[in-house]
Length: 287
Image (cartoon, rainbow, N blue to C red; front, side, top):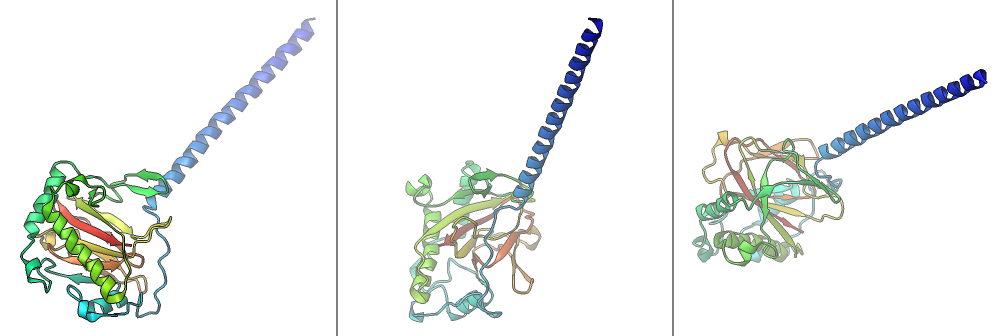
């Protein structure tokens, strides 16, 4: 009888050891799986906003072919601008508010008035920290992107709808005139736009990325209007453009009343670190 009880104790003891080891293995397995998932999530976030592979340039001299069909309808643009967009992938236009053949338009807007309205949106906390996204997931990482933004689409922005941003509204119409001009002069056939105001703080940046995203994004042209009318070289915040054909780069100063236009699908770019309190830009995408 005693021997039987001893054997039962041994079986119980062995069973306990097996259960202990099984639970221990389960614990470490769960821990390791959790760590693996965490690392994968971090790596996913480090990829910023995933971009589609940029379409190949049609040849080494041109990104795209843009055929002028009616040069009599040029107002802001000219033939050389279209050539620059084809060959360099971008163009820069200064003194945007007065660079028009329409004399009435030249008198309508002041960059200082537009700046004040944008600053008012910032001070009233209408801007939110910019997120990055993949599919339905969104996250924020200031080491990758550190601006704050507000969407300026008339369909959704109540301040625009209710007339509280008259100068921004006029600027947006002026920018939309660029879309209409491209439609009329090179048959660009753009009907949809999307616009945002972005403000970078001191130390803010946005790492290298592309404006066309996985999942059906069809942005074709990026138009950036800079509001930094007192910008100095030491303020930083230049936009660095990358030429995917040869690896060269070009830095564009974010000077007030300057417009930068580039091919959204082809030109990777980054916002270099800003050294001023508020680096402001309004960006419109043509679809």
